Image (cartoon, rainbow over all chains, first blue to last red; front, side, top):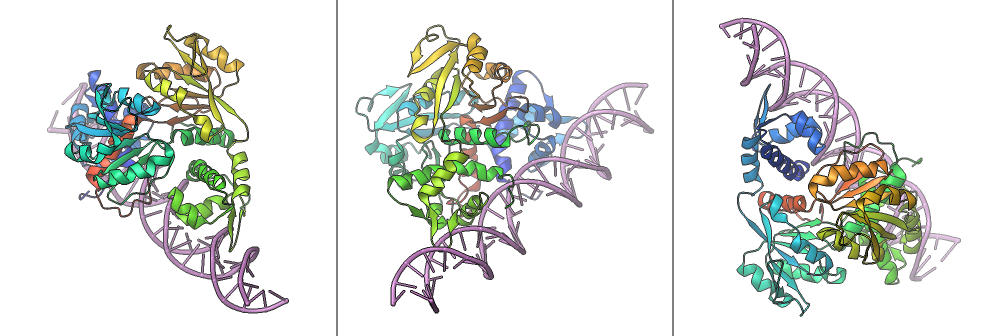
Length: 220
Length: 220
DNA sequence: TTGCCGTTGTGATTAAGCTAACAAGGCCGC
DNA sequence: GCGGCCTTGTTAGCTTAATCACAACGGCAA
């Protein structure tokens, strides 16, 4: 045990666990085993037990895990006990959809400010979120203490926008553009590349075929 | 060498390489080194060389790689030399955005059919794509020989829709819902969970901090 | 209280992936 | 045509992650 760092792979699974635990609680289930969890989230039960064990002994042998207790625990771990405000940069096609996307339903996150260059929407409120001109981005981010930005701008402006975000001391970027961003190492980038996902999927289908056995394992 | 199977991690990077190579070609660069590529796509140069080497000796020592040659090669590998039609299931908020999303700009993929339950849009054409009622899904998918589906339906209908897709012999699913789907092992699932991405990003920021060194490495 | 049963937590093993480092070998200037 | 230089292709070592398998241990019934 001894307070070691959580493996990256484990960290990526935490939100998945957290969400399913909440589903269980909604269904008034107060107890769950790693095997049962495994079925629902498609992660090997041993992996789940190991993941949990990084945080100490959360379960009881012969019994399983206490759902409310786990939820309380992960809520803190995942910072879900406080609201996180994020910014959206680029209110085009995809950006608009994200404004309407209900992040708040499943998590304690909301888009609290958006930025764009389009004069038709700048200084309006879209889906409850104020749209500011891009030129005010730095100021607003600092004033509102926003540390996370989602970027859905045209590919060719992505790096430029990123540089601005860096100046405003943003700490994390969720990047929907296909560009791989250059950032200082104070910033963490998470890429969501839709075209890539599709191409990868096509590749796997054409080349891995039925082989590789049950795909219960290894989604993504 | 000897015709082995491409590692999963490599496969996921192929579309990234492919895209950047096309950017190079557009800029009339006909030659590139692994080091140069490395900077652009944020992948270690040794990893790139290794990735390429799975496909044989594509480069020339002391020279680098021939861009057009690589593109031709990857185009075939990634099935980009022929159009891939995909279906969209669920034309709500996010679904609409995907209809407008220009997959075709960066890849030879297009959404050629969409399905929904909403009578207001069923049997209309949205963004150039015909919307069919969900009840016709099986028939249309078979008639149009569509093997890949994107699902952007409400979470609680996701599994149900998936089961229908399975019956229609779909081979791949790009899943935008937070549910982890159960599928027969003829189907490959790729999950895109936006809430998860954000939560993971938040977790990393709060817990990994500046440590971990340069983040040029290990995005996603 | 006792003993069986079920499920955890974890050591050991295997698998997958990344990166450093360098010999092999082609390019290019002279 | 020759020699130095550059960049590949690959071997080896290392790191991370997944999985197996089981002893430890708490719950629960009698």
